[in-house]
Image 1 (cartoon, rainbow, N blue to C red):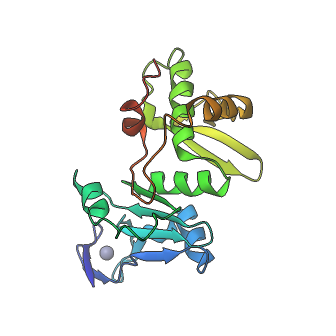
Image 2: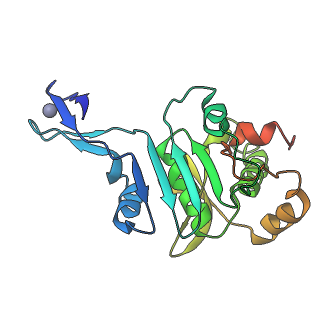
Length: 211
Ligand SMILES: [Zn+2]
């Protein structure tokens, strides 16, 4: 059991935080992650709803996808996760292994892989989009850009930015640009098989200078 202090009434809420889910077996968990509900804890005393991100291993066994959400994790987490070498006669897994630091990044990864996209190419795509956008929006930061998809298609959301009409600023997804980046940079963005990686803006900057 975990204890969380209610910011509303000070009550110590005791709750069992779920630390694993397989989306292929529990689609309802996946829906809750998408709606944000998964990380909401309700105070039993005053009913206040508290958003409490916590470590979660998100697996999709059908896709062989493994995303470990580790909020505020230590710098050496990847070393720890990748530290146990496989015996030589066991081939490295063909699966996808990722670490993310917050729920927004987890959601973004889920949508990227659900759409059959590659998150490494998507980081490059977002970096290019950012270079274009910041000419008009000089205060924008790279982390504002998130990939999203819904029934209407795919787009890049610019988090925290709204237009004059109060609508979320979004960019239409450019299939042609994505395809070109995938063809030109796929090899430069390769990762060791079967190892966890935290694929984000920093990760990309260590490999490709987009400016
Ligand atoms: Zn309370």
